[in-house]
Amino acid sequence: MEESTEIASIKIMNIYALKGTVKLGLKSLWMHRLRSTLTILGVVFGVSSVIAMLAIGAGASKEAQAAIARLGSTNLIIETVKPPEQQELSGETQFVTAYGLTYADAESIRNTLPYVEVTVPVREIPSEARYLTHQVAVKVIGTVPWYTEIAPIHLVAGRFLSSTDEYRELTTCVIDEQLGQRLFGFEDPIGMHVRISESFYRVVGIVSAGSGVAEDKKNSAEDSASRSGVAGNIYIPLSAARSRFSDMVGNFGTSGRSFEKVELHKIIVKVPSNDEVLPTHQVLDTLLKRLHEKQDFRIIVPLELLREAERTTRIFSIVLGSIAAISLLVGGIGIMNIMLATVSERTREIGIRRALGARKTDIITQFLAETLLLTFLGGIIGICLGSFIPFFVTKFANMATVITGASLMLAFGISGIIGLTFGLYPAWHAANMNPIESLRHE
Figure 1 (tube, rainbow, N blue to C red):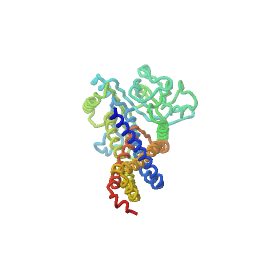
Figure 2: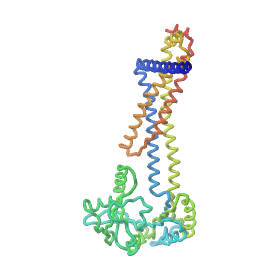
Figure 3: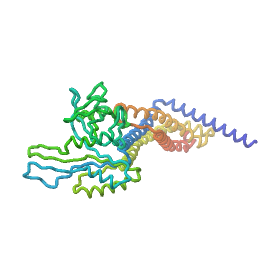
Figure 4: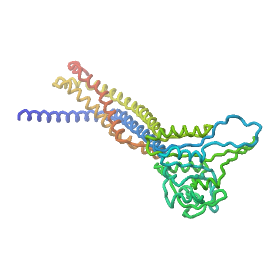
């Protein structure tokens, strides 16, 4: 019973001693307010820069991964690529070059890979759309009804293309919201007819891109599309695109005329799981190389791009965090410099305390407490400032930022370690002063 009472008394005494040490430290820092404030600023800027840099890195990582993920981690995208010219066609003024993916390729993929969930052929045609007096440049996308299973688009109104549209080669179309605003203004586009080339297409649906990005990013993308001259996309049945648009594209120049024949611009393949993506990539590459004499295609694997983006952004975050941590290191050096100056100024005080019975540990505790108070206050203010900087970066620079609890803890933890590390030497130096010489110090 007496032992427990004694232990409790010791704990109470330690608490009071710690409380007195903190009060004395605060009083000492308050006596030198300007110097303490300037010292704290080094920690504040260090902590805030670490948080801001990590937030920018995390935002860039999230944005890159989201952009790639929208392509579908279980998708494989085969694109038509114009092969390099093997030889110059001198003396000829007219020739036809056929290259790229074909309808037969899509059929071969379906027959060769029965486990594939979806195979989506896509044909892209630059054209113009007209409604009354409005005329805009558009991208006509000829595709199949199950296109929505592999594309990040959401139905806003009406319906998407149906199997009947594809089978009967109907002149129906689905437009995106951006194009609907440009062509129809405040009118409801559903049921209206849009003229594309020489045919009229009835609007049966409106879609929006399901990008999941911020609204300002969406507006930025729309502005970019407007500057490029394309108002939006129009989706029509692939059968209608095949029958109403020629595969031939003419190029007319000073050296003569040339024609290019391209049947499909993309074939998108969706497999059941991520584990089957890479094996399917190898099979597709082998199959298409047998079907194509020229290297007129490329296979894009979003899963590989996603993993590469994760590695790149991880390195990016480490580099940004390291650069920001240097400012914390500079702040730590500033703390050591100030504490050494404080020890020099309070040499006589240290001698008096030692003469009155203070132990070395008491002196070390006193100066460490002052150092940690500086670091703690700087860390708290730095976290508040660092939480606001990403907000302004997002608002004014249109860059995505993500503040995580881990980044806050990391920045505060690093500042605490630096404060403790750089405060140990001044505290040790103060504790090891000769009491007699300290009392003689003027």
